[in-house]
Length: 353
Image 1 (cartoon, rainbow, N blue to C red):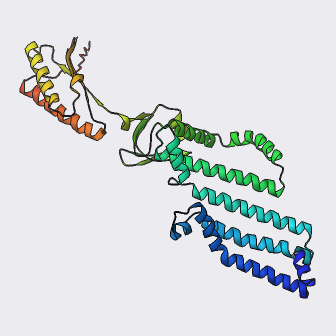
Image 2 (tube, one colour):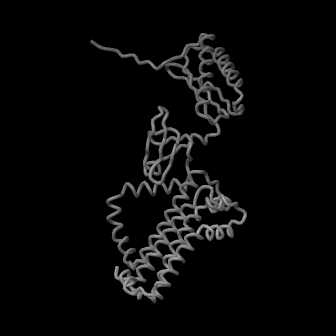
């Protein structure tokens, strides 16, 4: 406020001219800021057309930089004539640096997207298959790091003792750990999932009591749509601490059927049953022929057991269920045609008077 009063009090002929020059300088930079921004971006993206350059994430921040710089340089130009105090100039300089830092950080963060050149370069250089979920998490982590660096720069510019800040963070970590244990566990769980990549969005997974299609994943939780079409938000700490079965990664589906037949079933009937079941399974195009095993496996007091096992070259779970249903129906029809009865576990209870 005192510096503004100095401008009014010290206003004379020469100062007036300098003030006009400063205002004209600000106006020129304001008017030419789009041109300067365009030229700078064109130098780095000479193959881009005018529309693409103006849509660049750095275009608007560059315009703002030139406008703010015009005001800052104008104040420095007027300092000798209007006796601006060193304290005032120091405050203006800090504000200028802080605004520029925040502008650069915001521009860098906005430029980091799944389609940005930086992310594409990481995908090309990586020796691992990076899926969309991994890219999304990577983008978020990079943005967070950019803002953290910007915050530290701003604190340093304000004059805050960073060593004291780090010490404070160290002392406060105990309090934060106690107050936000679940949040920290979920974040760590999210990082572990990000690193291990046991599943991706769109895949069908099973763990603990949950089973369904993964719809979204963040550093804190994973959203799954279950078979009854409900959506479950599961903390990452639960997922990372339990075994996960990725059913979408299954290349073959395992068929396992145990038929309990009556103990008096004739051996000829058993051989006929085994042969007909074999023919039913062989009719399926997706069958892995070398995996078919149909055997008379057990003799028990209440019956005998025929075990049927094989693999089908099917990954889709619903398709496998349809196939399994069709085979089971045909096996029941064979049992009916051959007049072979299934045996069930029974218990005889004697009651003494």
